[in-house]
Image (cartoon, rainbow over all chains, first blue to last red; front, side, top):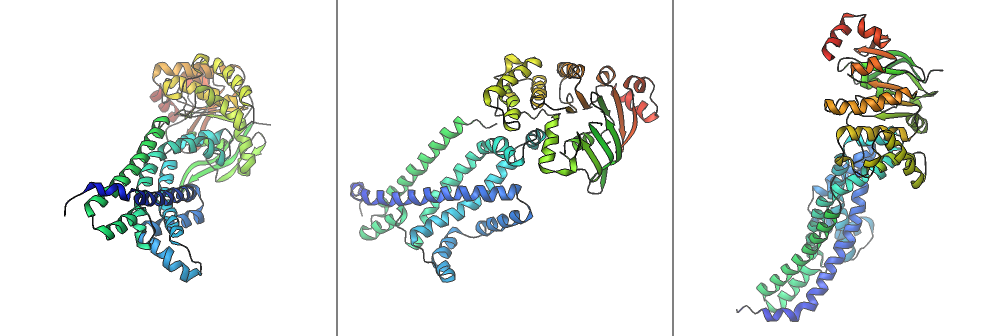
Length: 218
Length: 242
């Protein structure tokens, strides 16, 4: 079979729609995952024995199982257990939230604990309550250290959305698969899909570089 | 009433006894210099005063409040006891001015303009007015430590605690910090200073305390104690630091 790149423009609207779903899942999932990760990470770093244990179990549960199993569980097993049915899109977003949240929690914990203890002591010694030390001194410093590994996790999660092909979400990879099934143009379609992923991750990398340059790591 | 009162104060780290039933009263206006070999408990004693270390036995009253009270009352004590650290611990994301204005703004609730005006006065006092807008990494060690002193003073404490304030500095930079401390003592500030600077102890200190194994072994007038050490251990120690 001849390779014919001219077939791609015809499928672009369809691929763009798939890319839009991918972006939507990644965006919603990462907003939720960052919030969850921040909470779980702070629980690990500063929580008492109970909060720390809860966060630890959550993180280990997620890091120890594949994301495909997690989304399968959310989509197929949860309805059986709870009687609550979720559509594939919701299951996909939830999977990113829960999965990215666990990895981000460890990033958050590491960043906060990497800030020298002396700065916390300096804040406490002035008479500041612990939470103000965190929000005004340690937090802003930890945030700068958080950006590079956080960006890395964002890229990983964005690509992980391709695994949701298993529950039939119409994201980019699934769209590519569907087009393929109708015309068997493997080289052209998978090249196009790969290039679209590269554009998405490249854009993310560029944004992160700008943020990193603006916030000097101290 | 003494401003700081140790009553049979003990501090353990696990099985290790760092302070062993210390009794000590410090009056307003005193400049107490704490010396002793490493591990003798002098830094721990200092850090118990503002609750950075929790005491494990006895009691410790600062300005009428027990450090055991915790919470809001402990924060009250910390506002009355400013602290200067060996490693300066300036906030690296803030300029010198912002560092000094930070306490008044976040602890005392002052407006930004007022806090910064006061901060500038304090920076002037430690001779760093023209460095107000530099971040810590653009300042020398001696300058950073002077900013740290101004930062502690900004909260308007009744007592200043110094934890080896010149130990991380080159010899020529120590002097500028000691000068600021001397000036502070002359103004009548109550000071508790952990240091190895014997010239400072002799010239500025009103009281010298030598610690050994978590206990106060010598407590007296600096000049008398240094010229005529009452114990062989102290005599030995003084020979090594001078």
